[in-house]
View 1: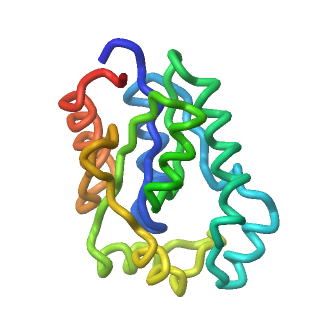
View 2 (view 1 turned 30 degrees about the vertical axis):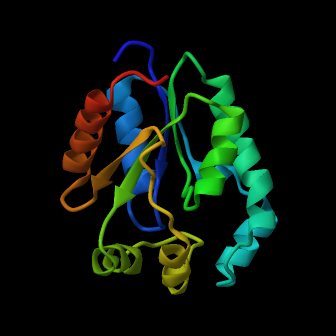
Amino acid sequence: MGTPPVVVVMGVSGTGKTTIGPLLAARLGVPYAEGDDFHPEANIAKMSAGIPLEDVDRWPWLDSIGRWAHGRAGLGGVVSCSALKRGYRDRLRSAAPGLVFVHLTGDRELVEDRLSHRRGHFMPTALLDSQFATLQPLEADEAGVSVDVSGGPEEITERAVAALRELGPAS
């Protein structure tokens, strides 16, 4: 693929960002950063209490991810980040213009089932409806691909790699 892209693995909670992100990074030969690690403690406390974040809560988090992505420009990297709204993706792109998004998609039933079996994560299943309500899928003018999350992690990762190859080099 030439210069490795900086990829944001995006989607609602439970689509597998934390599982697919490191697998994709390994396939691309670049480092992985867990988007949840960029959250301030106040955000984690809110989500743990079942309170959806507001945009004002997300700005510092997105800015931190954007700084990481900017630092990886020309080197490549993969970071997970829900990036549910176009405005969030625009903010990330303003910090790191060459970003490419891999939108992990799945129907609500599949995602809810995966969330219900996840242990040790601060995001409760109760917030899934707010995530789907907030989601604004990638638009035609956004560099990125949508990848279905049915199947196993290796299969999903392979679909993501193939879709990125078809997309071509990041510009």
